[in-house]
Length: 290
Image (cartoon, rainbow, N blue to C red; front, top):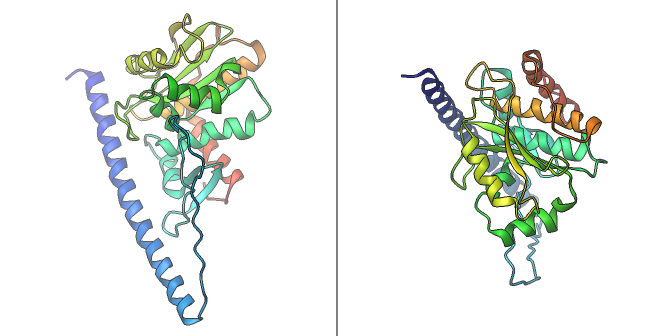
């Protein structure tokens, strides 16, 4: 079996294992939450406390399709506590555990880091738009009307010279996939730049996404360019590469107002990033040991 096929198979097995672990953690968390709710209800009955439950509904009606990607606020869990939260993107203890070992990063970590770039690091930079994997996965299946509502109406993408998109190779509406890559829409360069740390294995998915969004972004004549970048030395660090490339590109674009000319990463940057992410989460939320 060719080496690249073996690596892909190993990556798929790691994803399946991570999914099984996440399911087990979710079951434990749900059990803990149910126990806490039952205890709270028991205490309220014993103390004759009347609890008022308020419900809300959207009274506005419209014939247009609502494409807001609504994410429920994560519930607290004693089994898998939230360590840090930005907007509606949160990371839990089980997510951070992926950073301690040779594990593939999940959607939660990529979502959280891109939210950090937009809401904290580049909060005052009106030239940047950061698209999380959660949004990019939806964008593959939206029509022009839905994409216009999401990108133009909600996120003012037409006014953004640079759009950084974290994406994976999943071909369904569900979360998942086996490989992360970074796509950058640059108006000054009139190009869509694709950075893939695994030999271009996600090129087809990135071209599909570009073809779906380029008209809505008014970039129909922009070129698609596969960029030379540092290749991962294992089958699980693609998410770390995406995060490091996003860091490097935003810094480069801030100085040169262009993506063209950016140099590949150094391996030392990749090696140091997991610990840096753990410290970042600790600084933004509850302190954890690392």
